[in-house]
Image (tube, rainbow, N blue to C red):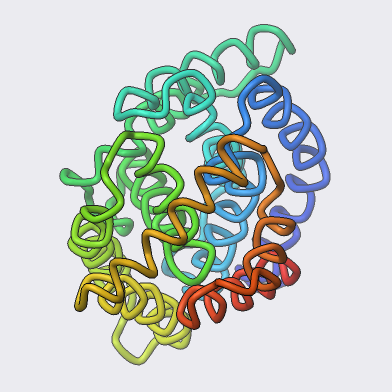
Length: 277
């Protein structure tokens, strides 16, 4: 069996062992906090992106079974601390929730200290090291960084950015301008990981470009800012206050007769992405 085939077999075994358990634990963490931008679906998508990265990179990022298990758990715990504090300190709360899970369930992870460190530091991306580094923590943290970044792209990324920036108290008119440099840095991290002709890089460049164009359109004219204000008002009312699910929210935006063209088109794309995952 090839290295890739052997790794895929290991991956399937670990997913069969862990996915249901981790999804239930993630749901438990968010049971008292409605936060669609960072809930269990976000954690599941991040694992899916991590899986994509590893499998598309050939032998370059093949991980041992131990490393794969740590990355899988880190993907499902990295933002659970947002259920306690949606601000910059959430990584430490995520670490505590992960540690509690390991102790409560009697789960033994040989390199638990690395797992907990990765979860705690997942948002400290200014000091990110290359995924090719030999050090286990550096490799896994870099993979988690980029997998997490990929969920900031596309129509889903537009929703996630907008929701969490509103929760953090950023005025609607300032949100697009704050997002664009952050978005660029996220794609740059992926660009450092893959060659320019990589199919995966090209796929996610399209998603990144979609998100960048949307926020650029929103901040380029007064009309764009007005359109974006419509979106933020609807997220505040329908999601944060009334607690509609994202799919119901998207459908209400599509059906609303006063929805601006830019926002209606985004909502259609968002609905498709939600249905595809």
